[in-house]
Amino acid sequence: MFEKVLVANRGEIALRVIRACRELGIKTVAVYSEADDQSLHVQLADEAICIGDAPSANSYLRADRIFSAAEITNVDAIHPGYGFLSENATFAQQCLDCNIAFIGPLPETILQMGNKSVAKSIARSVAVPCVPGSDGVISSEIKAKELADSIGYPVFIKAAAGGGGKGMRLVNNSVSFCKEYKMARAEAEKAFGNGAVYIEKCIDEPRHIEFQVLADRYGKIIHLFDRDCSIQRRYQKLIEEAPSPFLSEKLRGEIGRAATRIAQKCGYQNAGTVEFLVDKNGNYYFIEMNARIQVEHGVTEEMTGIDIVKWQLLIAAGEKLTIDQRDVRINRCAIECRINAEDPARNFAPCPGEIVLYYSPGGHGVRVDSHVYAGYGIPRYYDSTVAKLITSGETREIAIHRMHSALSEYMIRGIDTTIPFARAVMRDKGYIAGNYTTKFVEDFMKRTPVDALDFKNC
Image (cartoon, rainbow, N blue to C red; front, side):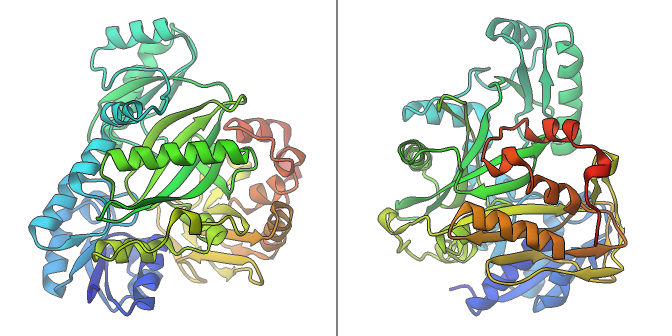
């Protein structure tokens, strides 16, 4: 097992990795920007090194500074978390070249699955259907428009190197295509340093379903069932749950087997997520594989009782996966609400600032993953995540009731948060019935006046 791990990330995921390392008796090194000098991950790691000023381009995206910190502290491994350098194949290869374990998949796998054309080819080669669209990157605006016209609108223009909704544009007709194409390329270049885009047919009102996989270096691969991530705004997930209330047991098994076939074909190692769109008739389509830990991994952990981050560390250290597929059970239903520093009354405008009062909920079946506290300032330079609130129960109904109760207890003052929005969703009849698609938030906000959101305690 590793003796010391550097966590090349910030916020709640850095803290999550530090806690997993601590349980395994591994020392940790935190790296941080000047804006994060008071973050909990910095305070709770065994060592901490500042790697630059606030913008991520000058700190968390500076591989050279991260490697300098790794050399100074003599670490065995680097855990990249999610975002930043987590899916950067060059960074992963540099780790290996420096004789430092990269806690994630192999560099060549990251390259494969990061290339949407290659990833789709892999899926098709193992008989997994894909969303109709371009066969890889389209650099010609004219050819891109011709393809969009041929497969029919609406279509998505998506960043080839991206994720999280950045560099993604929905085009509803031929007239607006060229404008949206240029905007998507510009957004992709700004977000990822790569303006390449591809075209994909828009599936009407789908569910966004993803399957968590774990794979060791000896060829053993299992899936940990599904998460429903359909409640999202501008392609950013807001509420997730596991398992999906939409999938039948038969369909769940079928998609799970498809996910493991894809992972097997690309020689996957460590933790990863295979993502699908599922239409109202139960037809499913592979869209991408995220070669890293996911933000929402906690709902899967609560559903199955399996510690995914610990297994990331164990697998990277060369341990064999001791869990068989038949051992994985859906033991509980779990729901996650992302608590962001955003004002739902002002179209979810970001609200950085100092938290003057902070009280997090607790009790049976309640989990809070957060790096903040009273007196902590939410920086304006990074994503707006304050916490991930997860509740679980023997049934989905219990998990929903616990979530509403926990949200009602949660007190964060000094900044605006998405707590009122999440609390209103937990009372929505459509959500309670499990009847929602990726258009839920858009429709919900249209029918829910701002004055109906309960800002009590927030």
